[in-house]
Amino acid sequence: MKSIFTERRQRLGANLPPNAAIVIAGASTQYRNADSSYAFRQDSNFWYLTGFNEAEATLVVLTDNSKTAKSIAFVPEKDKLKEIWDGYRAGPEGAVKDHGFDEAYNNSEINDQLPELLKGCDRVFYPVGKNAGLDQNIIEWIKTAKSKDRHSSAIDIADATSKVGNQRLIKDPHEIDLMKKACRISAESHVEAMKFVKPGMTEQEMEAFYLYEFAKRGGRFSAYTPIVAGGENACVLHYVENSKPLLDGDLLLVDAGCEYDFYASDITRTFPVSGKFTDAQLAIYEVVLEAESKAIAAVSVNNNVMDAQIISEKVVTQGLIDLGILKGSLDDLHAKGAFKEFYMHKIGHWLGIDVHDAGDYMEDDQFMQFKPGMVTTIEPGIYIPSSANVDDKWKGIGIRIEDDILVTPDGNENLTEFVPSDPKEIEALMA
Ligand code: GLY
Ligand code: MN
Ligand code: MN
Image (cartoon, rainbow, N blue to C red; front, side):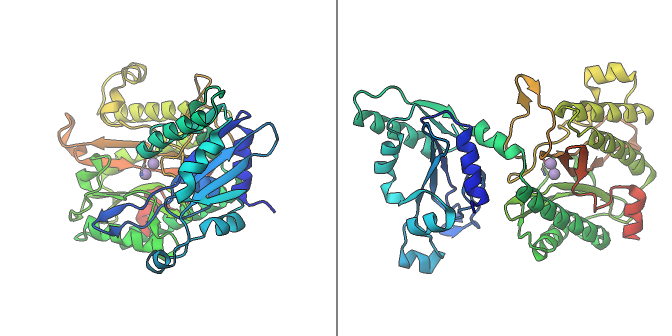
């Protein structure tokens, strides 16, 4: 039986012209300092197409005029001493046997072999501009390929980003299972965090709590650096300092999601440190919640990706008018973008192996229609820093609510609904 990875390479090949190559580089080991490395994380495209989790590997998929594409891997060579220090290496033999490549070579052979493979290709796809080393190597390999054959025609370079990205955009059943698991782990962790938090704790302690809850359920890594923001820190959209005390009366915004078997989850909840929302916090919260639920309802095959955005902008604008924070008519204020002072980011993004996942948002110059198998976040927010020109009671409130939504043939499924977003349910959980 073909592995899911072999099947993905075949699907990619079927989507390339004949006589083409696509070159995808795996990730390199990254160092924090001296020879102390970060935990290795494979390049997402490379993982998607190979399931091969060693550093410094390269995949080439070649098409000709036949129906099946050929895949060739370059991998670290077997090395007893290196394996004692850093762990098992498959080597070319193991790569062919366990990963279904048609051929595999040691990395030391890449500069000889790659030009041979590219000779006779009309076009080489690779992720242009993502990795300076690969940009340079591709040019050199093409130059060498052409010098080997004086009668060769041009070998064009094309960007592979959309080719692989748009394949990743529609999740297969295997991916959906992994994403459901990642989402469930993160949702359970948010529930535990709501029960755990108390005034006097710190953002740092809560961050550690989340990482522990993720890891003990099998999600060792965060899909992104968690944002653990007490009080007004929530108004800093990418706050990752996570070091301040949590005060009675403040809200805590936590944007945290684990990665499970390479797949991301991405959840934000905003809850009161003391367990009870104040009236002002609740008033803003209800607006964000309405924007979120109406935007989620718009995630369906009948709509395009911009519909949820516009709906959320209108709900936020109307809510801010009702609270006296914005003054004017809905249509006028929406047309002017007045909401952007308080809701300045987009409604969401694709989710998958990357938290901000690969895949285009436009198709034929139009916003893309949702299709079954896509997963998007929906994450409206309202952020009112103390510098805003508003009544004092609103100052310092920052609220975002974020869920992960799978598009299904007849609507959608909220993969993160296990963690409550209803304020009454949150208060009950925290009581
Ligand atoms: N956690 C990153 C984001 O929500 O986009
Ligand atoms: Mn997000
Ligand atoms: Mn998030």
